[in-house]
Image (tube, rainbow, N blue to C red):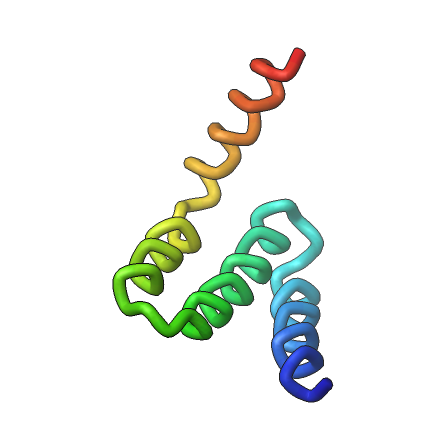
Length: 72
């Protein structure tokens, strides 16, 4: 329970300190994803996970917009 609460509280604090923007939300979730990457026992998979988690907000937003267009 504590293992889940601490990252969640960290994300909430980070978001509240940065303001409620999409970029701030992304940053908070990005930090949580980085923490989860280290739960993987295989080093190469940890690095692949970190590579995905380290995507910049601008690249993420472009990917999200492109995905929306393709879905329509």
